[in-house]
Length: 70
Image (spheres, rainbow, N blue to C red):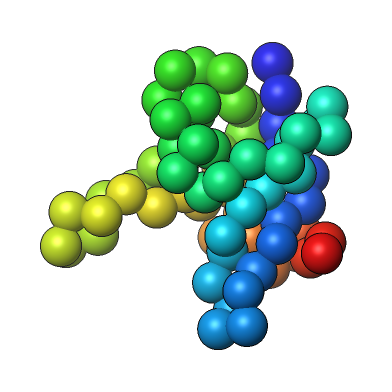
């Protein structure tokens, strides 16, 4: 099972992709799908008031501690 180890943000500061523990680069949406399918551990999904799904780390409040890779 993979974990998320780094991320990439756009110029607005929004997370657009993640780097997994095996070195794969996956989109934000793909990370949600893989988490829901049980392929990613260490993250969970939350739902906004508008129904949008967002990933959050299980042990932290935000992804701010993750390195930002380009």
